[in-house]
Image (tube, rainbow, N blue to C red):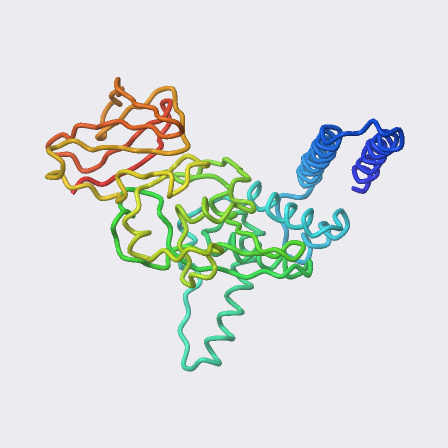
Length: 341
């Protein structure tokens, strides 16, 4: 796994020598410096991408099932050295080999007489969930998150579980806060990052659809917050304090790059059918779709009039009687979800 580092430093050394010659001959300029910096970072990012590919290729050779986390951890210790590569390997194995299975929910219920007995049973249950996830290749969020946590522990990587609420469907808009999901925070090279291997593995719509994604690997906090609200707010990893009520009433924001603050109108995900004379005004920042359409649960209707000013788009949607949901599409892809009250 160290070959890419050698190649990286050779490329950087070549660029540095070239720049030093420019300096000695006094032919350098700010433009030279800018070009050198751009080349340096392009080489660095290229090497990082190549290393991610190497991690994925290595993980593909691993067994699909293990008896316990220690067995999988030995493979990771053998093949990877940096914290970044180890966490990437852990996440990659989980999202590629564990399927979401709702029947696993509350598979390990237990009663306790006192807190000491509760702690003992919690640890025993945690161990059973982790081993079952590895052996069967199925889990709900607890299995994904606890396995991620345990593998990080075995690799000496500081991390912990996060419980909280998620926003994934129309029914989640406007309801009270509840702890219905679990994800992870891990520290890589001294910095905390957010991970959700459950959502990273795919989606569930009556059955599990395997679609591994790295969007939920080190997700930027402002993007993660669109769908995840932690029980302890400090685990959101963002400075601005946003209440549970504001989160609950947010619309569903689907595009990965679209942030909560980019949706300027409507601010709430619950729209009254009696407001604004039956017309909903939309104002979205930092998005430039070539087409916009809407649906009240039926075939999408294309919006013909879209105003674009700088990096803001404005459009209107006429409400219909007897509807309960509204879905906005950008370029024929779901983008924003609202409840109609």
